[in-house]
Length: 157
Image (cartoon, rainbow, N blue to C red; front, side):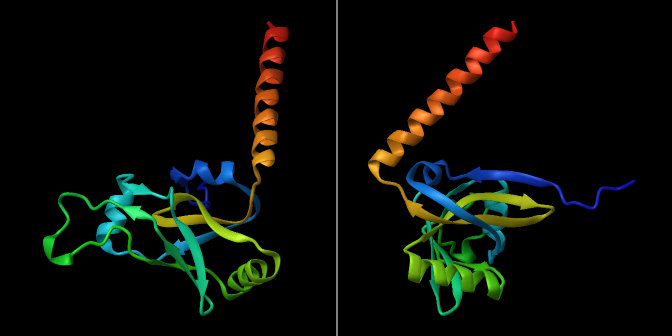
């Protein structure tokens, strides 16, 4: 019996997003890429650290993602590592993003890049920025959960 679900492989995760923002909603989107970019992404030569998503004219664009070209990339293609890339979302999803960004003060940030089957997808999130006290609180909760796990582990032994 064959599994009809395509295999998902996470290529890169933007850990800074989870520290800087409170995530409200997540969407999976396709990316319009060139051939050299696909090869470079499959070799994990991408950085999402300072990137963000902009919604213009009912279209979403990924800005600031750095894809380092492979040394074997053809010289005639003139690769631009930080070019603006179009995200492929449904009209309904784009309208939700536009409404949240304009009315509620949310921002759209890239969370992770993954392979779904042989397609490269990006997970974007609707997020609100954390204040300093929110960051401290989330750090306390994180350390408390680690302590709880450690205590439970010691009690089982």
